[in-house]
Amino acid sequence: MDGTIGSDPRRPQKVKTYDFVKDPPEGITSNDILSFMGLIFSVLGLLLKIKYICWLAVYCVMIHFCNSSYREEGKQTFSLVM
Image (cartoon, rainbow, N blue to C red; front, side):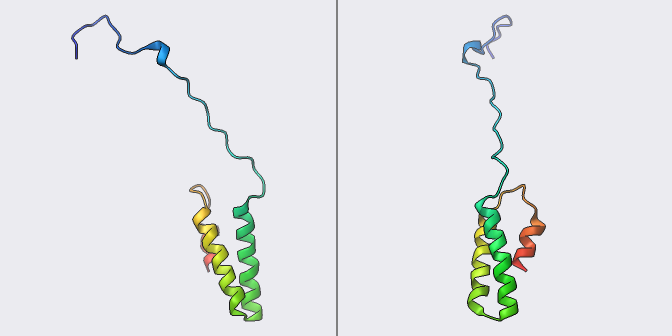
């Protein structure tokens, strides 16, 4: 410290106000579409017993898992993996 009591080392002309980050618009995103496709492919793969459809479902779920945000529910992602 300087030891000077009366001086303020901050520069008021350099102060920048904080701008709030706006949330992305709510609606159907590609992550929701991948989630729905993974659900449909997994049901069809289990009912029709076709391995390629099951692998396609796993692929969609993995992409959904990698693109999911932190605030998204873990239960939905976990149910898609099952």
